[in-house]
Length: 235
Image 1: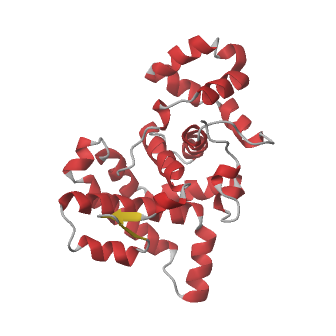
Image 2 (image 1 turned 135 degrees about the horizontal axis):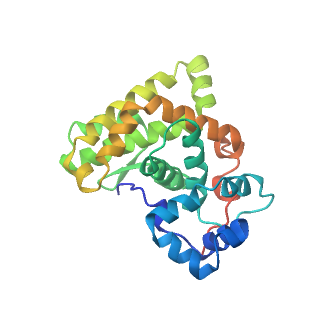
Image 3 (image 1 turned 90 degrees about the vertical axis):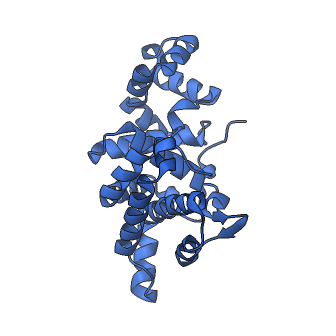
């Protein structure tokens, strides 16, 4: 149930074909590329190539790549411009975007009961067991980041016109829950403690970096154009 940073370790055949089509002789053969992607240092250098970002942004038709690869390329390059240089951080946030591009994953499921609103999640924390409490806090952090990062204009509009929570509220709520979650034993077990701590301390910068990404890819923040419109999922 807990989202983990795994975009850099699950490449599809379509992802590899895309990298080869963009980098060509720089990447070698498909077999060589697979070997390079299996090596952490080589893999990260390949994924940092600006040519991949340009190819993703400038592609005029449906991209035949996995959502995890797609979001990692976008997030990693956006974060580098914002001095958020830790690859695991970009990997985690990209995983959140990939998961939340599926509407059902935006819902917090507590003992089989899906809940949608923060006040319900905060109420559920009062009676939740230790493990469930960690999951709820991680979800609150993720949802706060997703909403404030991808839909800032909607939040501003609702705040100004309807008195709904502001971006400051989302930042405070997300930062606080990431901080508490970072101290949990399960965060250490899943190697999320450092990532959650960074997200807590740099929530604002992370949110603004996602706002920049959203501006570059308007459809990501357009509720009428789902993310899978741009990506043809791998079979």
